[in-house]
Amino acid sequence: MGSLRKRGGEIRQFILENISSHPVDIATFAAEHFQITRPAVNKHVKSLIRQGVLSLEGKTDGRRYSLAQPVTSEFGYPLDGNLKEDVVWSRDISPLFSELPGNVRRIWQYGVTGMLNNAIDHSGGTTVSIRVNKTAVISEVMILDDGVGIFKKIARELNLDDERDVVLELAKGKVATDPEHHTGERIFLTSRVFDFFLISSYQVVFLHEFKDLRDWIGKKLDNRIEGTGVVLQMKNNSARTIKQVLDKFQTGDLGFTKTVVPVWLAHHGSDHLISRSQAKRLLAGIEKFQAVVFDFANVDFIGQGFADEVFRVFVKRYPQIEIEIINADEEIRNMIRRALLGVQTEAKGD
Image (tube, rainbow, N blue to C red; front, side, top):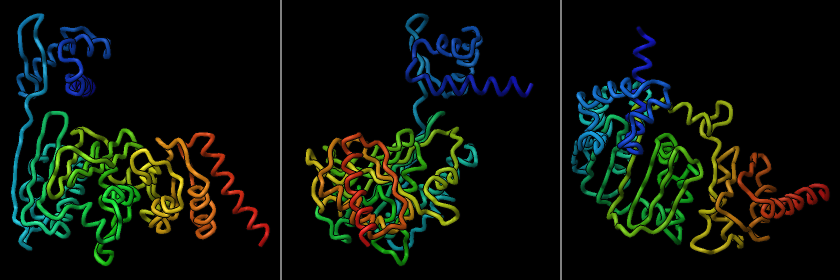
């Protein structure tokens, strides 16, 4: 009996996760996947409709299925110095996720409290709002404050010329404008643990999707968000744990000591990565880590000065840092080899 229940749960979950891409032929699609009959699948479809998680439009050949409209809850709070993220979580948000698995609830607690704390401590705003959207498959939380804007604030505190440079700093993982009270790790790690993560502020966006570790985007948006908006999304049945994600970014038992740096964020627009100043922008703060992976996805050229600054000057200055290169084509790897050869030649000369 237990195995039958498990099988039934797998079929219903499959239906829910694929209904958007197969609104007309979901019964056929599921039947082929599980090697069962269409009537057997239709029993599960009808059960999901009775539960209110699936909707049906039309009749016979014209029928279309879809997920029921998300359940939405909204909250608003004054940023008056008295707001506490743990109280908001336990009183207002946590009850909305009570039926989810424990690992998923812990991820939501980690993300919501961390991003709300940023609004409380750093936004300089007067209000913050939280909107929770839930379907049978996925949940989404949006947090919006009316403050100065995260990219403007960090750019000012770190003396960065362009707010888009903040995206690169956040992608590294240890940017802190108040290092006595914050490690600067929470935004990075939150971005890695959720299925979808986005911060938008005054036309600049920082985005990451779990399914593609290289999908970092910093660009201008048409929609202007005044203040800072954060969007978190997670499948309700995810098996992911916070520990699984954190383990990817630590060496031994030393905590957050490894980072993946998306090299392409060091340039703007159509500019190539040529100059030493671009390299120095890429390298800022990297000395805080024990292992660094330079990801050259979406980069088709680097200049000699850029390569020399990263792979000779920096490597010579911090020889204890473990360097790894990924997604670099042969031309880029040749440029890197030339720079590393300079390090070896200097070492022999010493």
